[in-house]
Amino acid sequence: MSPLVAVLMPVFNGEMFIAEAINSILQQSYTHWELIILDDGSTDATPQIVQPFLTDNRVHYVRHTTNKGLAHIRNEAISYAKGGFLAWLDSDDIAHPQRLALQVEYLVQNPEIVLVGTWANYINPQKDFLLLTQPPTTPSTIHATLLFMNCFVQSSVMLRSEVMQQFRYDASFPPAEDYDLWVKIAQQYPTANLPMALVNVRRYEESTSQQRKAIARQHCSQIAAQQLKQIGIEASPEELSLHIDIPHFLVPLDIKNYQKIVNWLEKLSQAQSQTNYYDSKAFESLLQHLWLNTTLLALPLGWKGYQIALASRFCRWNWWQQIKWGVKFLIT
Image (cartoon, rainbow, N blue to C red; front, side):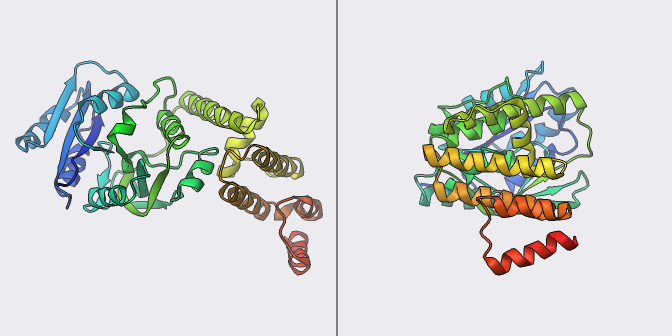
């Protein structure tokens, strides 16, 4: 018999898009699911919009009169689930009709994998396409990449319920509680992403307050710091700031900062070689990728930048490549 999938949908004031989100589950090719909608104290028309969908006995609606916060509501939703697999979908996102079927098939065929996400299309509120996000797909690369950033799209994730019972979202890490959770799971179990966009995720015009951005940055730094300890690094605040900015290209590139980036990547490489905490091939490949991308951006730094690049342990250029890169640095 096909496993039951519990689709968990937290919502707060979701009147604009929740009907579309629910319909995307009703239209799944995989039909053995239950949809649990947990309302975190909505004050808009969300309850009235959800009501007609309750004629389908697979759809369940739990409403709170007060707002508890997203982490609390996600954890509560887990407690209602009966399915062998748990799938998340936020109330303003859209699941591809094949999403559940493909993820169930993958988990059944790969019993060692406990969590599988997917790539995702980001859209604006009007459903115009913005960009395709393509997080890494293999367990070893995901484990390494999580040291730098979240590489799971929340609305794309499906997990084995027995594993989810061991973990919970930490309410002390908003809005990075999902990142914190994926790190904890990936440290103990293999995880994966399907290399196909099976969800559309809405992104909104920048409206996050500076205070909320600062809190998110602080919490991402804490999550990275905890992981760095696994390879024996007690990072300073300056190092943590540099670490979380490198993959997003947020470090202003001058000679001093370029040297700092190269030094930090080399420090990570050396620490990994001593601890073997990550898969060595995946970790070194990730550092090499970050070094190369940063070096491309450092081309305008000229001869001094070229000397830093050439001296790095990540430089794999043969003599002919060294000449070509030297010319690039000189003429850019």
